[in-house]
Image (cartoon, rainbow, N blue to C red; front, side):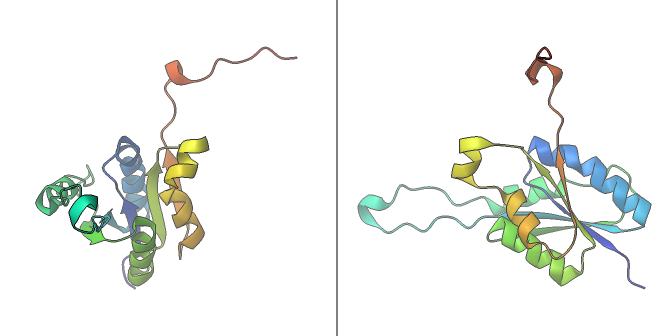
Length: 153
């Protein structure tokens, strides 16, 4: 029987960093391989002339080095790292389907309101399209940033 696969998606954010220990623990419990994936969005295509703003393309070597730094703390947890290019939600779901992943784990920033409306949510898109269960980890708020409790009415 093939080894189960848990896909862990990272965008190198604090939210992803906080989700990694949970992905590692589940992989260890299930005897699964952790497939650590980062999806780089392709650079925007601009026409020449006045519309070109000279936005530099992502430095693939730098991104690959960042991905290589994302690994389980426990050396007994098997893992593989993969760098992909494309729409993050679509690529994560495609890789999960191609690899037969049993679970997708990702961290979320937990943005709400107008910011989420304008920027979209990769986590939400993955939840809608995923070929397997998805665990979305949101870092708890720090006590100083939580809203104060209101008195009962």
